[in-house]
Picture 1 (cartoon, rainbow, N blue to C red):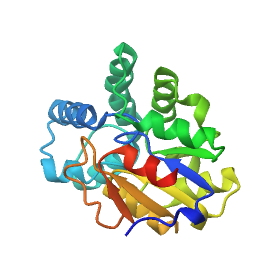
Picture 2: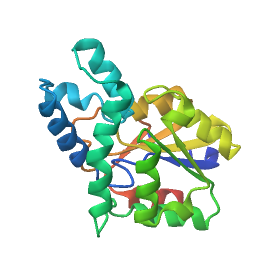
Picture 3: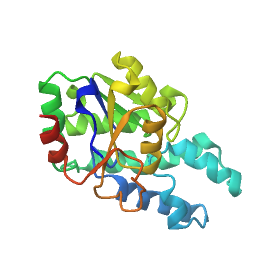
Picture 4: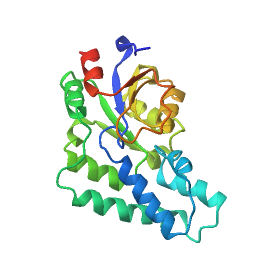
Length: 220
């Protein structure tokens, strides 16, 4: 089923796996840290954390296995891998076609927000390096919202900041957790089946696309 475009008054984008092709790097980075800590985390379990905040991932793991570090220290450990990597990139790995879609919506004066589970420092870095910052009137992270995806808080806060009812928001997501969060928030959801989403269940989305031009053409 396709989305009801007549109801759309604002669009909310996820970041990792939607704006940028970052999921493969996150997976590799996490594996390196797991190995450093002596943690045996299966690939299947690791995939369940896609779309959630780093602190939530570590909280979940600390309940299962003994890790002699605080959540704050573990998050810093994760960021110490991620931030230098993103800073070093000359050509940032944006998803093909996503800027055309965002620019099209921006030109039509449709309010845009970013709702991400990444840490604030990473979000700021990505928006500046990609040049996407100018498009988003609101940026929300899970720390600001008080809860991570799959809880709906980041999307509900984004809608509130945009001044748009949740049912009139369209969310563009890629992860199972993100899709669940958006649907729980009462929003329409388009799932982007791009690189890094291969192990994500996107069946609960209203529409699954593999090319952003599909959505751009439909909303034109």
